[in-house]
Length: 192
Image 1 (tube, rainbow, N blue to C red):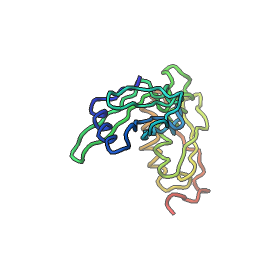
Image 2 (tube, rainbow, N blue to C red):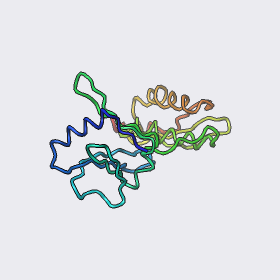
Image 3 (cartoon, rainbow, N blue to C red):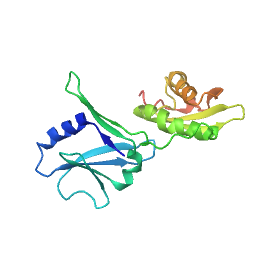
Image 4 (tube, rainbow, N blue to C red):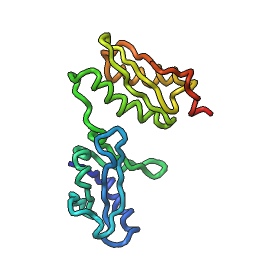
């Protein structure tokens, strides 16, 4: 179940004093179990919770958990860490983006998971994405770059320092990463 640390509880309690009486909090996951999953934590005025929500008593307020998000929030922790700037709210949810395949899962399944959960969120900030073309019998991973990565002058750096490093850390038995993209046909979309 979801854990809220005392520091986070106190932080929320303080924020809620500035809201209308009876306001609580509601948490939901947008696209749970997918690489693009995101946590949405909002104020929940009286009566705006859903009948299917799970209510968590936090002593000074109630946190409502959307039913469809409950599985992704299992073993999650909400914490507030004080720092010189005031503090930072942290939500750690191991199941947020889906379960990592087991080490004995097929190689292409593990490679696909790394692409979706680790690499594509990284290159998405530049409008790019990376797709799996194939995993060869020799354990070479063939990738296709698209979006902002197609025709980008920095794609070699992204491939070597980002994609290859991450992929080999996550799936060490990979022999090498091969870029099958025809970058000459790209229009260098990110660096126009």
